[in-house]
Image 1 (tube, rainbow, N blue to C red):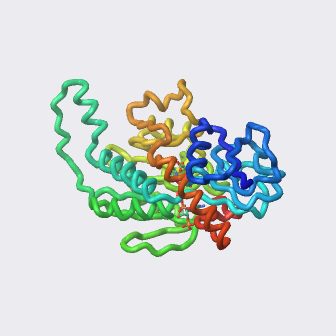
Image 2 (tube, rainbow, N blue to C red):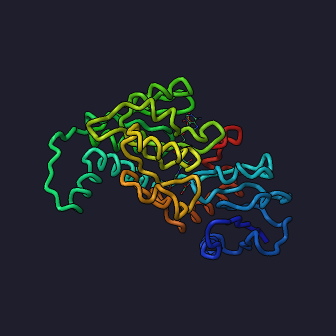
Image 3 (cartoon, helix red, strand yellow):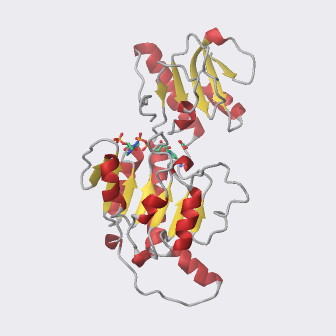
Length: 316
Ligand code: NDP
Ligand code: OXD
């Protein structure tokens, strides 16, 4: 019997087993925590699996991440070489991510947190010096599927948008910088910086004190704003807190963290200029993800094709 192995470390795997049973009738859906025939496994799906889950599977054809990111897979030193790794690309996820990014850029523009504070203190204060969206530059670190969608929607709201990618890239109406040499150009010209890139050896810890110090003063919105929806490993949280204290950063909107769930004693929870969300800026429907993976398995079995394979050399 065809077997799909689920290597799910961070969530309850049983609802996933049920979803896959619905879309892969006749398949055996097994969990890494239970006994199963390793020779029967042809495909695997994963979210934060334990190290070595996918080694010693002689007939494994492909591994599917249950999310858009694949850093959880590539940090497994025993990931089998030569087996394609596929990530989620889903229009629903992309739309939700753009909603989050546009919403937080608008909230920063309109000083929503500041007015919330005034309201709590029953203070009728009008800051008056209201900038326009066209005054506030948004830089998107990462111009892939998510970055490009957000860029279009931010532009529609009137924000000047620039992007940053690893390789040179043409995107209509957006200046895209690239590579290490392009980083300074985008950082020094972004009042709001949105990290929408994968966690790889090249990007780990990139959101640090040195980078915040290069951002403009962005006085019109009370200081430059960092938004991180990529991965927690991109940011140095101690540097974010220090930059907020020093005024180098005006605010931070964080959906992802060095440690998830964010530990209860993290000072980020209670900082007045930090917004914390629980890695849900862009959740997508689990049944839609199971259906997407089942479609890919059918196409691969029939004609050998797979979409959205990641490049193991670059880790995304
Ligand atoms: P893509 O692979 O489509 O895009 C990644 C972008 O990052 C590309 O533009 C790529 O450059 C750029 N990039 C990668 N490495 C570097 C580097 N070293 N220097 C400069 N740019 C780099 O991914 P998606 O847009 O679909 O997703 C991005 C990330 O968002 C995911 O990897 C995941 O970590 C995160 N995510 C978070 C979610 C959440 O709920 N918080 C939900 C979904 C995704 P190039 O174009 O040259 O390849
Ligand atoms: C992710 C996702 O990769 O939720 O974070 O898809």
